[in-house]
Length: 394
Image 1 (cartoon, rainbow, N blue to C red):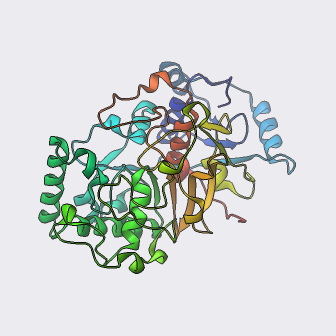
Image 2 (image 1 turned 90 degrees about the horizontal axis):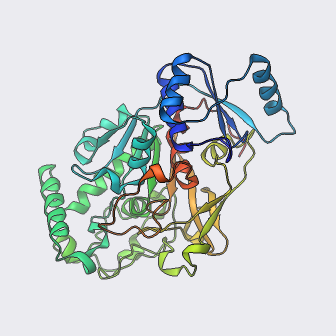
Image 3 (image 1 turned 120 degrees about the vertical axis):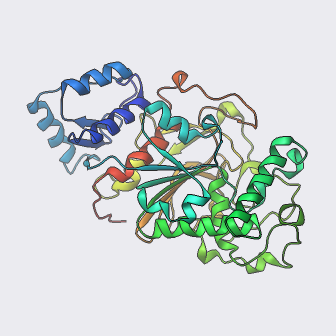
C-alpha cells in the first residue's frame, strides 16, 4: 500500500473486505509500506486482485515471518493488527439521494464494499443495532435545511426537500423537522455510546453536535419551523451533550450559510494550490486506533472544501484527538474520539477530489483517482471495526 507499489489503493480496501467475507486470515500491517495488508494466499484471491486491478505480491512463509519479526521490534513504529470480520455497514442518507453526491458512498461503491442505506424511519425504529459501522451523509440535524435558505429558497429542489422533510416528520409523529432530527441524533448518540462506530463528513459533523447541545431549545427561525427562535438561546446551549465540540457560538442569521463558529470555511485564507493538511504520527504499538485511521502512502493530503470544511481548534474538546491539521490555516481537518463504548470520526470537507464541490456539480470519477490519499482516510474508517482492539495507552 505504499506510493510506488500499489496501482489502486482504494480497490485494495475492497479486496481486504472481500477476504474477510471469505474468512481468510487478514492482518493490517500498520506503518509497513503504507499500511499494507497481509492476507492468506488463495488462487481465488489472486484472481480477484487481477480482475479489480489491485497490485499484490506473493511471499513465502519465511519472508512473512521476517516481516512480522521486523514489525514486532520495539525499535520500529509498526504493528500487525488482526482483522476479524467484515463489518456490516450502514449509510445514513435520504431516499432517492444521488449516490455520487456523497464521498463515502462513492468510495464504498468504487471499492466494491457492500453497504445498506437507512434513514430516519429506520433509525427511530432501532435498526442501528444491526450494523457495525454508520456513516452520516452530509445531513443537517438542526432542522435548518442546510442553511441553504438565502441562495436556494426559491429553487424547486429546496422547496421539494423541505416539503418531504416536513411530511416525514409528521408521519413519524413530530410537529417540527428539528424535533424529529433531534430524536434521530439521540438514537445515533445511543448507538455510539453502546459500542457503535460512527463516521461523519461535512455538515453532518457540526450539525450533529449542535443538535445534541440544543436539546429542548428552539434555535430555528420562522422560515425553518414556523415560529421564532427562543430568546437568548445561545446561553441555553449545553456543551456537555456533544461528542467533539464545545464553547461554539451559533450563527443566528438564516441568511448566512454557516451553522456556528466551529467551521473555519469563512476564516480561511489560502489558495487551492497551497491547500494541504498533514496527518499526525502516532505510536503504532500504543495508539493503535489513530494509527489505523491515519494509514496512508503520504502524510500530506490535499485539502478540499465543504459547507463544513475544517474545525476551529478553540471549539474542539480536550479529549478529542486531532489526526489531521493545517498549521498554515490553524485548523483541524480530521478528528477522532471515544463516546461511551463506541468511537466517532469527523472529517471536514465534502469530496477529497473535488475542491469546491457545489450543488449540481458533476460526480467525481474515482477511476481517475485510484490512489487518492483523501479517500484512503475514509476507507481506513470502514475497516476500523474489523480490527481486534488492544487497550490504548493514551
